[in-house]
Image (cartoon, rainbow, N blue to C red; front, side, top):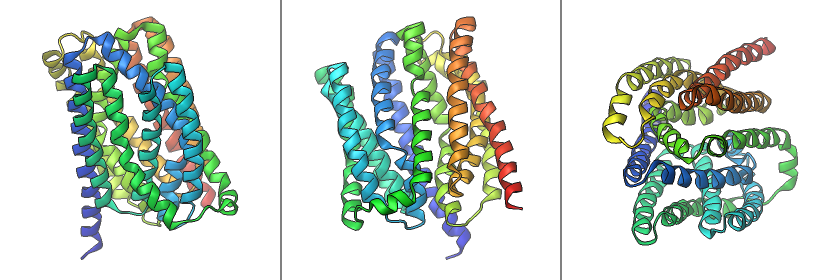
Length: 379
């Protein structure tokens, strides 16, 4: 079997998982949006954001580290898993106490476990297994969350999501069996891991967008914004697939310049399509969400710079340039928060959407500059 065919086969495995999974997830959230008022929908995403922030902190940067070290066959899994689980249980307990809801605490652990599971699977290039994990989790999320929603109300949505993520424990258990806890190895790799941890903290700040918007502009705006982000996540499916594929490949010494160029051109088409027809679809399906059409029109343009930045991020990670991604992560977070606050006050929800696009554009430019610097340093 030719290397070119294997490349297409591996990429298609990730594609099937992420495209199908994203469609399932989007349809699930779109359906819930038709059953809820914007304020209720916003509150659900507000609580989920709290869990997401706590989970991102608990992961300690392990997702990016595992993508690289699994590809390089560095047996650090049990060490990272142990630290993740200890911090995760503490974080989940604190969150559950603050929001007075055990299911939100379970969601913190679920998020964390599933993230480190798929990172290991992708790092080892088990692309078919990745497909199975993603699809099983999405199917469980929809069936359990909707089932609990009709029985318990909106609180059941969180419980169903939390339980669905626990399929990741299967991979974590295997990781404990296959590797030993080795803090000497952890110390040796601490520099790269710590960069990824700090980077995860900056992405945690980035995940506070809904928390900031809720405190400044109310849950109704959060509901419109969250639904707009669902559309954006659908448009970003293909670029994210390529990003997940590139990291372990480039970590193994395989560069894919042609693929990067192709995905950037495709992202231009995706962004243009979202700009032209996205608002019409939103107006037809979600009449209660009065601001959604303008949000989608603006956010669709963000696909292009986000894709460009993603290709550079894969390159930096594969070369263990954690400091580059750290700088980019901090910059993106600070720019995004600043623009959300300033443009949100000036132009409302349209300003918030514009802030997302402008922050992605800045990071794409910074990434290109850092890439040139890395190339020059190797000469």
